[in-house]
Image (tube, rainbow, N blue to C red):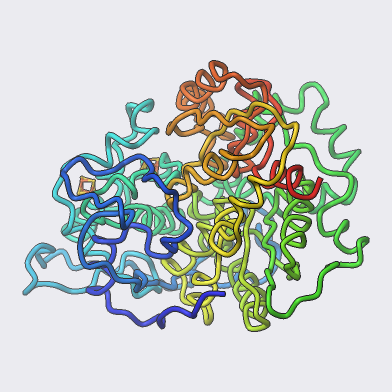
Length: 524
Ligand code: SF4
Ligand code: SF4
């Protein structure tokens, strides 16, 4: 088990410096890949013994803001999804700005409270940008969408504009898919994704028309858990309805959801139903406990992933807990629905910190969920226990590689899995976990893994589900599809369920999660 981390009250100066030297502040070095992932700065400062730029790294967190408020009931609002009263931020909140001050002059400096109700100051991050454009060249959206100005504009430049002129947030912020690849690309530690999340939250709150089709569509996509929960009550009927001819066409015409996509299939028994029927944990061990954060997909769509997590951890003698939980918030962050994300985060932080108090570490099988719990939560919210949760959160393979002799266990095992084409999700890459599956299965008899490269899958959660983004999404994913088809495999593998859906959509391959392969090898 890890030790608790520092408190929540670090200064912005401290945090800005950490961001410069440690672009992934919450990921323990032990769990990272042996080889650095892509986006190593080419300025000679990269030190592959630390996994990042050289410098005085510190483990302190970046500052949190707390601009969201509780949505007190139905996630789409008491008055239905179209109500303008459903503004997710406090009444009377204002965007502070001081057009008279020079943002680059420390003597004229006032905190820039761009997000209403918050206390975040990202000026230091904006000032750290020296316009090298590394982030722009790493951005998969900017590469295919000529109207998207790229991460440098969305981050530092929007903030400078805002500070100087009290300008509106440019609506191009909604074009960012929140893949977070730009974070890794910046050699100066500019907290780009945090800036994007803040700007997007403000844009949606202050400027977006709550009656627009785009707002309603995005709110529905963000709250997938709500619809999945309802569908899982009648999974066969839901699957039959969503596969009817014309439903995709209707979804595109009415809501702007890409008609080319197949709706995810709902399991006839959710993971939590299986867990309950099973009678919970089969292993009791107060010295080795994990709390499983299954997220929405593993519960409603791919419960076999959750079952594999339970069986693998029990094979290593862990007592598995499955606390109550809500969506990690990943799709909400990507769509600027920060109040929804906060409401879910409050439940997750409360329940998971209770499990931590009982001696558990938190394990997520989805790399976007682990990233959300340990990076986006403390960056965006100030909830009691949030840093404790961030410090105790891991991805599945990552945890086993740190705490168990996973390589040894795998080397003594075999499977008949065969050839796999592996895609590392952008959010795994962001946590330094892009190579973990390839390295883990290197010594496993009966399986051969081909890494299909460092391109983005293009789906980015909800991005590729938007009708106007579908072609871009497929264009971004084209390199991955091609690499998969060239690999000596007809089955894919990835840790992210939405990347899996894109891989399947683009190639027709069956897609597996690494923990399922691990289960076959270690449990049988
Ligand atoms: S998060 Fe991804 S899509 Fe958004 S600006 Fe950064 S690289 Fe581009
Ligand atoms: S944000 Fe970072 S990567 Fe982007 S231009 Fe500025 S210094 Fe370069």
